[in-house]
Picture 1 (cartoon, rainbow, N blue to C red):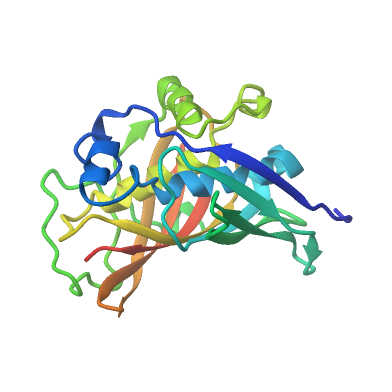
Picture 2 (cartoon, rainbow, N blue to C red; picture 1 turned 60 degrees about the horizontal axis):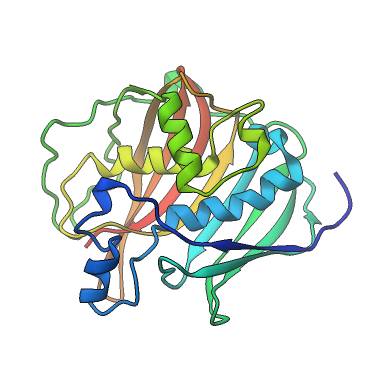
Amino acid sequence: MTGQFLRSYEVDILLNDEPHYKGSIHDDAVARARGYKAALIPGAFVYGHISRGAIESWGQAWAERGAMSARFRKPVYNHDKITVHLDALVDDGAFVRSQAQVVNGDGDVVATGWVALAHKPVTPPQPESLTLLPSPKTPPPIKAGELPVGAPLHSRDRILTAEDFAGSLVAFAETHPIYADPGFVHSGMLMRTAMGDVNSGWKFPAAIVLVETETQHFRPVYPGQSIRTAGTIAEIYERKGKHHFVSEEVLLADGQPAARFRRTQIYG
């Protein structure tokens, strides 16, 4: 795993027509009425577009022992064209890593991060050490600043269907052949799934905004597997009048850890 690469690729951003976007800030008409030039793109999609470079570089190995980080610095809008830049590889002894930068059509840096591949498989947490709690039927309301550190996360118990899988590839505008053969699930979908589980555990005082995420993969996930999320609220803090929480999450497929996420979100 030696050598270098330096590459860039462009992505034309276009939200698919998902019903739950209607009436939200991810709807062009609503966003423009609030003074934005178009619908705001969820950070998970920018994350997914960064991961494309990792798959192109390392293939299935990245789904088995890859890692990445993304920090979202400025909004990305529907119909934007973004360019993902991946820098030369650096070997730190445990990982080979490339710094990533995402730039919009105006030349503004909208996201930064890195993609990496471990030299050898990374040991996942033991499944028996994880607590699985069902999502509440009625999520309890939580006030800004009062989310308890150490609180366990909740999760839906569901089968990831072929329709879910196909829909995710459309949402990420992903056409890489590796998602047809051997057909494992897109990293962006895994992160969105865990995020949906975590955010379904409480009724937050404001819309959730993804700020930063860091990922470690342990094994590929395939359609037909049972998906759960376990973890805790690791940290809460206030910055510039905004309340943030950091969650430590493990996504399990058929009861085995497939990926770990450490994610920061604004919630009030």
